[in-house]
Image (cartoon, rainbow, N blue to C red; front, top):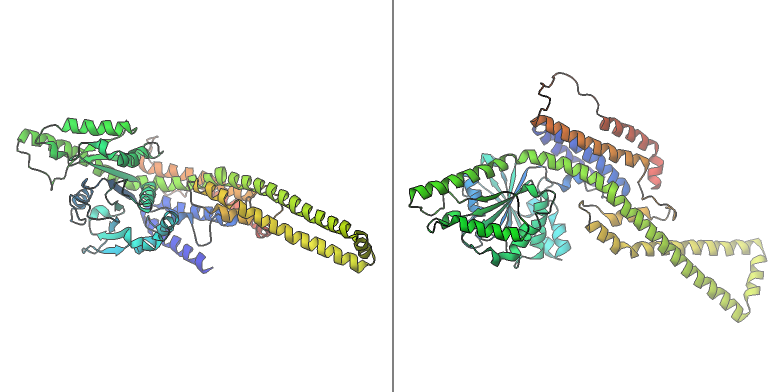
Length: 506
């Protein structure tokens, strides 16, 4: 109960923040609560967890790139303060989460500050690191740090500066953090260094930064930036450098999307030719304006991401999680029946064989029929022992499927505990003939359907904030009607109250 109160308090704190900042997302928190109830009942989440804490609620911008690509300088220029160290060599090997603070003095906090706070994108990332690198989960401070900054441009958003990317030298845990960061981000800036115009030598880096992103359904959030293009000014061959990089990116499948060329206004080389300087500055300023514009619009993309995550999680439970559990139950049933047949058959054969060998089979049978007490003892031993053995074989069959369940779990885009849900579905009082996972009732299906419908309504509300296809002015002072999804959720709640006893059985 105490752990559940912790989750409730965290969500209430989030609701307090969203009450003024974004009412649509405030309603989405309640939908996440409804989704959590489904997961708790099915055993997909522990009572100490929530789907709402698996996603960052702040607009999130990630900055990736090769060593010395100018990421830190770009951040410093954007924030108009020297926050990040910069240099031609790698100067920081940790992921830096940068957020706003009223305090004008910047502060640097250890990685545990991120691992333990559900408001930030790396909440409980130590668990993820531990899965891929045993023992590294306790060294979270070696991977992450949190920095505060008083720049107004940071209000309502979070920046993440990654360590210089060199795929050959990266540890598995660092790549895991990178992938996690990219998955959660609303905007990803990928930096390359124009001072190294031989992109073919960076094939492994391009493979991870480009090839693994272009086939994503959110590939539009990636901006590819060729930085420090001013270094080509003295040779006046920027077109050749850009063409070389575009060919390299094209070889890895990137044939569309925005490709920017910029350089730092404060750390550039001196371009003597005034006409050439004006051409470089004009292109730089145009591209920087577009990049900064996308960064300022990230709050809008954040709102759609969160609502999309709500709908996606609900659909994944219905379309992939439940079928996986049903397939697991079918496999489990076959294994239990095979084990029962083999073990009980062997026991019966041994008893009959021993009786025939020693000529005692008739004596045993006579003793059983001798009195009611003897018959009752015999039945108690057979039924009790047989049932206990059957339960042991059920548990053995459940454990034998753990590896397969983990494979299915790892393939899911949502973080749930499929092994725990399956264990709940195979408890001793669950019938071997049941095809439905624990908690998967008509009321559960109705609740998921209502959450999906509500997510669609949230998208419409977000659209109404930025568009007005009819061209009419919205009416004010009219109380909003109860939506279809809200009515369905209320009806579902009543149905589930009526099935309270059934829920206990599950």
